[in-house]
Length: 119
Image (tube, rainbow, N blue to C red; front, side, top):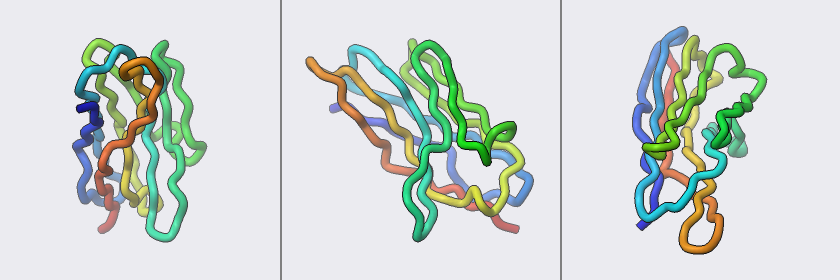
């Protein structure tokens, strides 16, 4: 069974840091683009950052300079280092990956992990 499993969320004070991790497991032949999305209460899910298999990255403007996305292709894992967190970063964060499973590319989502920034 193919799945994405996230870890690393929690409660942090403004200005603090958290690191999210995502691991893909199952029979996966290849991993294409991977990304982190977030959804705050009452808002649509939005892309936070993404990284291609070649290492090219893309960030939402409001997290540039504060968040860093990385991946390990051999381990099929991805991380998001989040620094200088503020209340606007509070949301459920979802791992997303496009995986070659069987004979097709399939889009997978993790279960989500809560990030709360509050004093």
